[in-house]
Length: 116
Image (cartoon, rainbow, N blue to C red; front, side, top):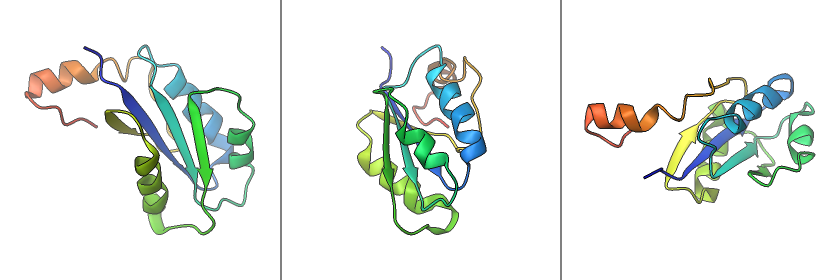
């Protein structure tokens, strides 16, 4: 059984990095159900780049005022998520292609369904 997961990406002034982050999520050996990007009031062009994407897996929203430390954007994205599981990806990070595939094996070894 494959878990259905949503990737949550808070975005704040990470325009130079967001393409790489989203490409790494889309490039997973087990593709996510959805990727939710919530912009927290960026002043760069990162959110414009996200909006221009035509990939149906990417959903997005822009908040008016930034929250401290990205928590507000993360919380809003969690509210929007439709997946069974939530995976966090910062807008300036990237995952290796097998990152998602390894999760069930780690859960089984830990006898837990809590992941990271």
